Image 1: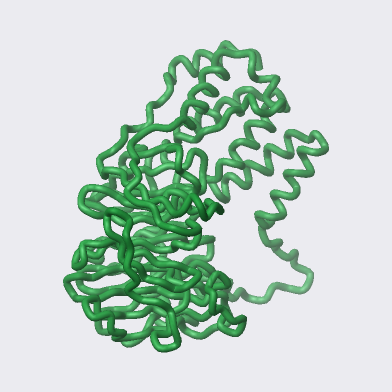
Image 2 (image 1 turned 60 degrees about the vertical axis):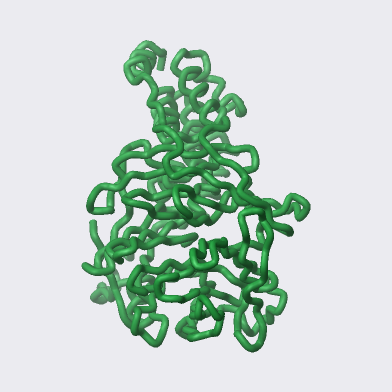
Length: 452
């Protein structure tokens, strides 16, 4: 169902995000509606149910969690475990099949909870496919390596005017120009004059000679002071001279903020995602300020975003909920839908190219890059294909950028080893093949013949 898009003041947007509709006052003796249990509460009750051996309750609680956050593999795994503990083979096999269709990797032989369902052909068949899904596949090669901690690199963009990649760092607030051989040049560094903090988002608008930077005062920044917390701004620089042209601050309110990734249209609309509160901010081509543009109460954590060049669709990645699709012209929004083999959990990066979305799923197993071919309306993924899966250097692959016929992305953002450095990998946009479905007839026959 489409949701009305709210524009304008922060107050108007936040009423949509966080304030429940005002209801007529109920009589004093009328029963009060209880709020739905929180994710944290459901997870705690799930742990208690497993610990006490109550497999049915454990299954029901993880089903409720799965319904709230359908892309999270942990809840699906626990549903299989709970069903197996209760010797409910059909429920266990059905969920295993669903996971396999989505390309998820897991070996259910790792837990004794599945002992009761292992002695069937269907179990071995599906479990073997899920183990296979965790093996390296697809195409990825090292493009270049950057010195220091991989987690320090928060942004990457292609600058066609310099024929260089631009990367941003959190600790020193650097903007570096990187050649294909990995050699670097400092273009900008945070200081009192330019007002920058950690560099969390970059875009080089060559046609309009603009460098756009989103920056936030984060604890990772070497010059961070506690009173700066929640401060952030969109910065506008002359791309050629690097002279600061404008600075557009996050509107002041009582919410936590950390400006993250940004994206720019051909005509100069700039969109910026807030990492701390699920809001997308916008600066219009003639606008003089950064305005709260869209958000939704049910969304959790924005990681990246991308806009079509003509501003017809904005795609916002939520690590837990999938992809939020916004039509900025019609002012409507909905979650991206797709086939039954679509799983959009753990997205750390998202890019758009010629009717396709490239999603970088560093927060799921297996860690992977996926290509989604979009329907004409842009709100449905018609097909899904893995481009690179479980490649050896992958350690929470993160944000990326497209240059020519390839996507370049940080491959090891989860690494804590400074000697390893930050690895930028390259994968061709046309890499990979579709997920191979299991033999459904064999699956159904196996379930029918299995004792329940």
